[in-house]
Length: 198
Ligand SMILES: Cc1cc2nc3c(=O)[nH]c(=O)nc-3n(C[C@H](O)[C@H](O)[C@H](O)COP(=O)(O)O)c2cc1C
Image (cartoon, rainbow, N blue to C red; front, side, top):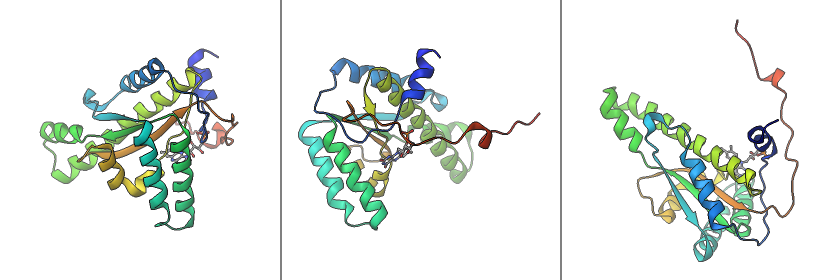
């Protein structure tokens, strides 16, 4: 296997981190990798917000405080997310700007509803590619990550916290060195997932 495939296979979600800081150069490398992702119309309608220090503690407290407002399963996931945010030396949030939605709607002259649906989906897909680039780049540098989607449940507060009003919540990603490596959950085999039409 080559290095790229090795890193794709090696990446696992890690939810607990050591105190070791993430070198500034490595963080830049990870963000550069995210920014190299394909994006519809090359709009790069993503923003990356780096959260650390006191702001990161504030974010962890915000998530923990809101966890109790939700039923058991989601509140447990929110509490776990708060612990991951607290334990990681740095957190990267990904926010969609809506620029692609505006750009595409002007370009395509579809109905408002159709173009919103289409370009919002394209925007989410573009940012998901950026997030995955980030996770793989981090793995290649010996760093670990977890994609925290559960913060969507409190998206209005976290978007405001990130200072991106008008943006759409995409992902929050703690980045650091794994406190403990994890083999991760097993994956279904390809024969359950692939159909060939010939
Ligand atoms: C869109 C998305 C949202 C996710 N949200 C969460 C989350 O909120 N909390 C969490 O602990 N893991 C979250 N994960 C990580 C998944 O649980 C994890 O990827 C899955 O269990 C497979 O494990 P692996 O990443 O180690 O292969 C999310 C992953 C994706 C792709």
